[in-house]
Length: 106
Image (cartoon, rainbow, N blue to C red; front, side, top):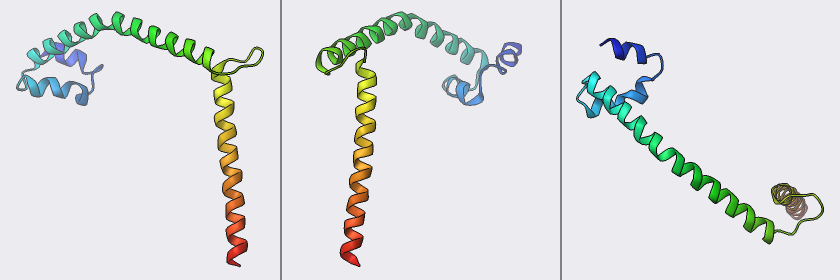
């Protein structure tokens, strides 16, 4: 089918295979099903976009009011710094434990 040849450049076999399987290898039906799925996904996109913004804003509001900040710093930068500090503290602690263990074993 000519239409299938045109879309082969855009769709991988692994992407199109479930549609072919569902439609019993009928390429035309599989393409129609794929296009219907695209339209369905497109219908959900605005709703998902609004949900994503609402969730992001809700998280930001909660973190901004709950996380102590100083000056121009935002909670994302502070959290990143605190996580890095925690990683550095764990490394220091692990180094100290290893040294203590090696002293006790020697």
